[in-house]
Image (cartoon, rainbow, N blue to C red; front, side, top):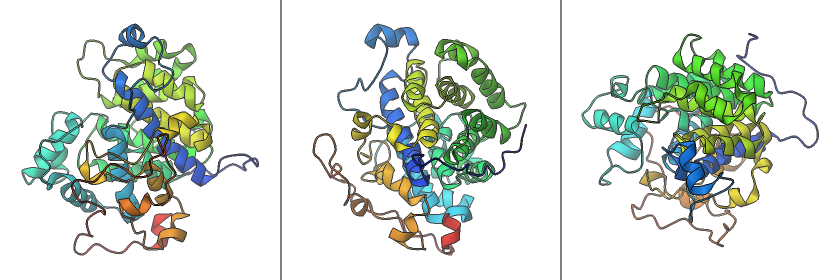
Length: 388
């Protein structure tokens, strides 16, 4: 296999997506896939067909992102603040300040890996011990991995390095590999790589004999035969939980490969395979959005994505996924300065165009949170170069 440590951007035709368009495509694609797939989560294809036929668009009356989108915002804001200087201490501090140490009642809307991580952090356990729980192999890191690929565009190995730092607080083993595969794949797509190179980039950053790599290879090998073949190749029959990282990541890459990177087909293939459909569609959407750019996302689907509601992470309420995309591209320095300041939620939404209902503001923030907490003591400033 050719080296994919650094994928140079190919000369682009005049109408090709640029870095900002790809960044916005990747993260908006994640949010769109999340919202499209949420109603089909934990369902079998036969159950989806019985209820809706084939899903071809939003089936929820009020489509919205789930924990996949809100955790991607969480990781994206953290990465925008620290850039390549990100450390495990930064990540652990953010988990405490933005989630674990807040008095927010019962933890809402997230998977087993997040619950296990928070229980460990609240007991005073630190990384990597905080990741030692029963669901460290889940797709909870894969669902928030796309921002690292956006930040490290064209550098899959760097994307994989950074996402592993983020994931060390909550995941280990196959859970880490799943996140690394997604981050590397998005990084390759951000540089205009072909579908096959995107897949190769994902495989290059995980152990060749890992469950993740084996599942991913099986999915891509049968992708030309369609979603049923992909699902049969990787789904663990009889296992009751659907958040297995090797399964979810392989389904997402299989959907992406079956559609040859086309956005609509990639996402809908993932949705209609069921299982952890919000996550598989979110990952497929991130890959395809990075490949084709934000203009490939149907306008009606994009219009439904507003600022985060905070239904899972109240501290993320009011932040928009597109603002996170902008923060992770070099152009953000012109707006926020070389220090990489993360703007408050109410500031980022100031220029937000009205949504499909004419609204420009997110739901009211009952928690009074408008800006991420201040730096932990002793945190070094991030220079402009670290945020490229």
